[in-house]
Amino acid sequence: MKEKASQFAPANIALIKYWGKRQSPLNLPVTSSLSVSLPLGTHTTLSLTSDKDMIFLNGNEQSPESSFAMRLSAFLDPFRPPNTYFRVDTKNEIPTSAGLASSSSGFAALVLALNDLFEWNLSQKELSILARQGSGSACRSIYKGFVEWHKGVQDDGKDSYAEPVPSQMQDLCIGLWMVSDKEKPIDSRRAMIQTVETSPLYAAWPDTVASDLAQMKKALSENDFLLLGKVAEENALAMHATMMAAKPAILYWLPESVAALHKIWSLRKEGLNLFFTMDAGPNLKLLFLKKDAATVKSLLPNLQLLDVVAKPQHPNLLPN
Amino acid sequence: MKEKASQFAPANIALIKYWGKRQSPLNLPVTSSLSVSLPLGTHTTLSLTSDKDMIFLNGNEQSPESSFAMRLSAFLDPFRPPNTYFRVDTKNEIPTSAGLASSSSGFAALVLALNDLFEWNLSQKELSILARQGSGSACRSIYKGFVEWHKGVQDDGKDSYAEPVPSQMQDLCIGLWMVSDKEKPIDSRRAMIQTVETSPLYAAWPDTVASDLAQMKKALSENDFLLLGKVAEENALAMHATMMAAKPAILYWLPESVAALHKIWSLRKEGLNLFFTMDAGPNLKLLFLKKDAATVKSLLPNLQLLDVVAKPQHPNLLPN
Image (cartoon, rainbow over all chains, first blue to last red; front, top):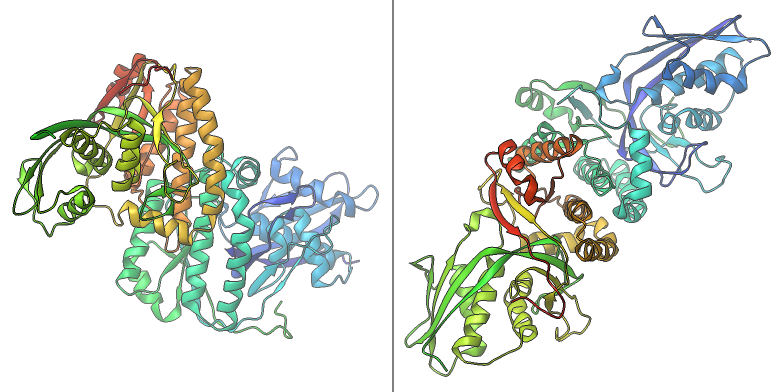
């Protein structure tokens, strides 16, 4: 093993959402999902130490009683040599408040760092399965580009992992439209459970995803941005719809979120090819093509441009 | 027959929504629904005339080419004696812009006036079936109080009619919270069709209604206002959720609507027993008890108090 290992994993934005677990301890999902990785993500440095786990987030040591430190220490337990502790130094390039699921890139980077530190030489599939056990969508953050998480059917989760999706998509841009950085009224893990358990509309979600996923893969293989945008938007709206029908209702939308939706639809009516997706929060992630980036930026000056995903990717040339 | 007939029918607010037709020409619904009638509604005076139909809305003669006049004339055609025309004088007590489905009280009042003019002496059930053919939810506006529209299963619609629901509910108040009187982006008839045809979540709607309807009848029979409010709110949110997942999405909510939802939830958290329902539009109808009316009015000064529905109603004493 090495003395120290440093690894990076990208944040990812789901175009077809992961919403609902069929089994909780292993984070096995009800449906497959599909995401695109960002160039921004999490850098994690891992080494062994004695005495106790030391966990740093963006340079600040976290109390062992903090939920952040407890979740990491619990995840590391099975890999811990006897009487040994970890020093974890993790830096998020995207602020947690942006709702970009830092736990995804965080657990992916941690797993990559473990693999490096102990020189396991695990396959990407094995790394993806490990990351999934830390946080479901972390299994997608093992890869760059477009990534599908196969839901799997086994109880042990060995067929529930992510891998890159062949894509001809070019010049996809993503922009973050923050309408609020206030804390969410309910965290996404709890919201997911509440939706599965109480929303009468959730019964229709698995079929919705199956259909949306097939369309999304078609969009990627045909470089059809309009289809990608349409399906991503519909899928996100359907996810939020299942939440609104939960009991009690879960509504992450703020007035500003709805104003943003109407604004996007109105710009699209005027001919701009602009779409959105939304995760479990009030903020929007906009999808558009590179050629429209300047226009979008001028119309929505507060937009944070996250990335241009430009290159086609091939199934026999898995990006990493 | 009489020379002239004048009748009134109440507007109604659905607590369990009518959303989706199984057959269009006869307005046969996918699910049953349940409403409460308001004291406000439509007054219609009907007489025969020669030459041409003359249709007045709130005192103003409507052009025969207007959709309003054409819809009424078409509805009246089957009842027209040879070479005879109708003069219809209809007055809505609630402004159409309030989104209180004036077509419901309108067609109910028209059917009651026809029955009176021709002295048909139809039963309330027969009147309800006739009114339904003009506008689905008009079948509920034949009655005062709480009313259930049985969806029926027959193709001829003879088992799809409304009747009063036994109720012990006391002191129910309704308030209208207008957040916008702008025209809707899509009328509710088209929105309904689009949802049924394209929303993947609509598949779960019929079971949702069946369960909500049973709960609502329980609330009425046990005078359980908290259950009534909870179920009405959940049912309205589920209906809007089915729309949001339509393709393209249908979102009647404005930023102000979402602000209103959050406000109501926040007042409820503080202990006020306040609930809402929403129809196919951006405005809210609030539900609360008479004892809280002054508090509600002071907290929401723009609220229009529509009514107090106070008296229990018994199945063997059908209100009319």
